[in-house]
Amino acid sequence: MTQGMKLFAKVAIQSGINSGSDRKIHTVITQLRKHIVQHGPALLRVPAKLTPFTVQKKMMLEGLTLVFKEALEDGDFEFLDGRWLKVEVRDLELHWYISYQDDKLVVAEHIEQEDVSFSGECNDLVLIAARKEDPDTLFFQRRLRIEGDTELGLEVKNLMDSIDLDSLPSPLKFLLQQSADFIQKGMQGAGAEKEVMNAH
Image (cartoon, rainbow, N blue to C red; front, side, top):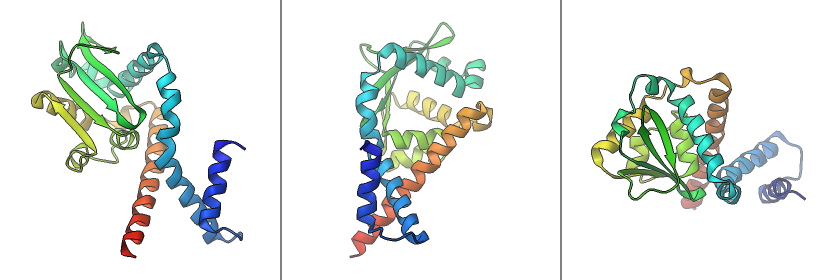
């Protein structure tokens, strides 16, 4: 039995499914989505960490170039010239160092010292990228951490706020929005369940 099938069976049992009623099916789907959102990053951690850095670097540069195409053309990354930004996905135990040199972005695996760092969990970073969550809100909730040069951190945050989803290639925009919608609904389901448990 695959991991996905085991997860579905576990959720079905927990939800008490014993009929084909729409309500029961909806409950199972909601529970399954919640489990995937909560535990998906843990399942991705090992394969992500085993991915060679050369592959990670290529994917990161291609992704950044697509997302920030207009900003790069306008020279909006010049504030990172000679400076280093650390981006960390805490629950995947991954991090990259990003800078701007010779009019292009560079990604490194190791450096002596970053100037500013942004760290968050996988789900939250997807929500930020899809404009489903505001970086300031997550920062005040301590779900997004910004450390180091305050002025540089503000520049990076403003750049994140300037992402125009409509400028992204349609397949990337669709994938990002669908992923964010799935995550958001899964997190809302987990939050609602927590409120019910606290009420009792």
